[in-house]
Image 1 (cartoon, rainbow, N blue to C red):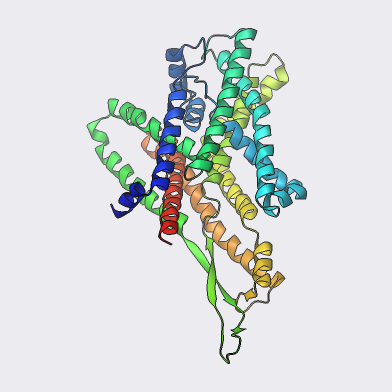
Image 2: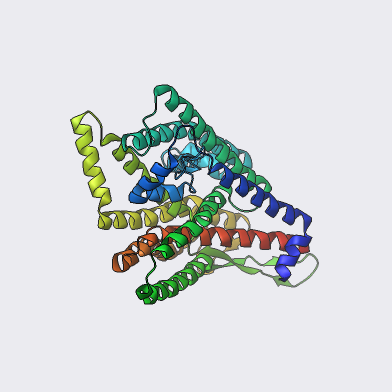
Length: 420
């Protein structure tokens, strides 16, 4: 209550939170405005029968269920971000721009991602509209209607990207993550209502068990997200001018168990959805070879074991990948050496960098395994219980908790800054 009171008495913080609420309200209104010529009743029936489109609907913030003007949400922007992050490995110049050129370099890097979002939005929008038309989920669109709807959904994606960046600038937290979070929360009443419509008294023990398991998972996610491994750092002794005494200062570098946060989950989902979308589109192709290959890909990705293993591995791989991008042991060791600091027992420079890198790799392994396990846990529970509503629960839970923790930390930082 004390924190809530402090939030609403701070005009700056109160304004930022109200701005976030206002922007998220706009995104939810946009998510229920359909593009022209769509039979939403027929579409919703199709989405309920297709697990792939149901999953894509959750990831798009519910905008796909109504084929809204923001049906792609921030998906193309996330895909563009993944591509830009991957290019830092292939092109050292981009890595320099992102990590070493300060604020101006990061702004240019982000601008390239924005420019890449536009063609990706056009490509994904065309593929999704064509795919839904071929699956008879929507009426076949004429060439003119396709062009108009494609223009609308592309503009919707760019608008959502802009709103997300407005949250980054004038709100608190990561705008893209908050938009996805809003879509997840907005879909909860519908999923809960649908579940209780078919609820049976005999399912009470199972529901209680799942609820207890959910509490354990939530506690585990919070623990892993907050956990850190301190690396002791000592600054060289300094002598005071005109005094015979000398002193040294000791501190530590907090290496988080999960440096990457929720980004690996979002990246893994994007990578899994993209080939499925392309394969679904090509499965009705008039070219026999393309149709055959697409059908094979769909069958492979429809295999629950293959999908779960691929999801787990992608989450783990992206955890390592994003951690390597966000935290550079070599750069950290150089900064320590320049400031006259060292890790006790290790020589400054390359030896320190090797030690920090080794510690980071070991703790990231546990973070990656945990994230991957929680991501596929709902599929495992679904296999034993048969409750299909748990299909996307783990992913939604990970994103929601990570976003909440991130916002809480930023609010605490704002309050602490005000006190100082």
